[in-house]
Length: 410
Image 1 (spheres, rainbow, N blue to C red):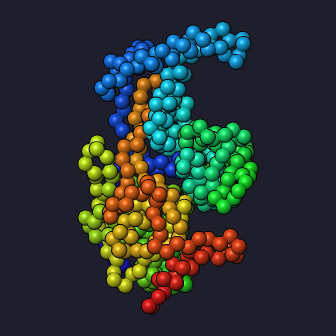
Image 2 (cartoon, helix red, strand yellow):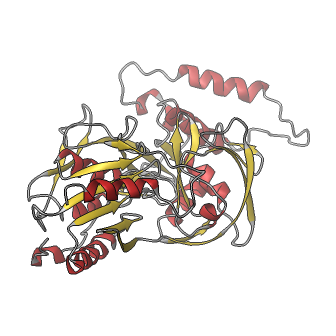
Image 3 (cartoon, rainbow, N blue to C red):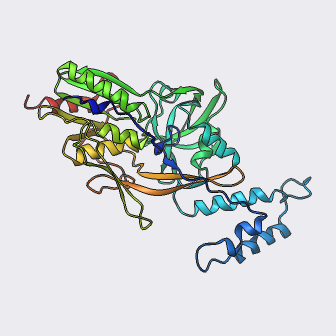
């Protein structure tokens, strides 16, 4: 493999990424603010853009609650005095009715927490979470974090946080509850995929620093383990490829297991080290809103005919990791080994509203070059290898299979 001068380019101006604690790719939309003088102007028929929308039922319900509701707090003389909270609740119900766990309304407090979570270092337990079949689910515990040490695994369903059910909890609210003072404990009620009964897991919160990349040589192959697609990942990946060239190996294992995603632009940069210039890496399908958008390879490097590539994936591979894995396979450059990926293939736009609130709304779905929807169940590996919990902890069946495939015909 030859590293050309153009490979020195790094991620530029990326606005799509997957939050390390939410597992949600999104981009910042234009700030959209409207000032509402009162609740009526916010929800009046005049404010509705859809035809035949009548808010009479809403106001009937509003008036009925004003007239008849009695608070559990008998000392309260005006249980509905906080009308603004009711408006927030109505908007949350509206977004929930869409059936998309990634389209949510962020009241001021949650919006502030969301903004804090964008930083690369934060307090928490160190895991990526998402929604699967209506359940709050661990996408991947991050390497070297309290979540990993506590034995949490991809696919674990989080049924409760400190005894409070997550059944009606949004992703943002769940993360807010899991976060807390460094050194304090959070108790998670976990139901693992192979278990019949839930268990409680206590995890001590800590400052989380997200790992990025590791390299090693294993039995005739060079292994690059990429843990996320941060803004620094393309530069670090280029350095890893330089190590690969110096090593003299021709077999390459790209380990994306437990990689919960990151910047879309970073995934494009990394895939560009493998694909010819102009090759499609991923398409964004906007439905009927507008034409699909294709992200294409910048053609930084071409793999020589001698180089063989295998990509390792599992249930913790999501978002940008699925983009790269899908692109390399669809273009015939790599086999996928491991287990089914998570299936986080949607893009959210964060729209700032008035009163320090925001809406995060799904605006597109990611499609592989061959048209496979990542969000519809993820990617199925070419060779499925389930990890064996009874094996020696030092044994890696998936990596062993990758090495076997790469060393064939050598």
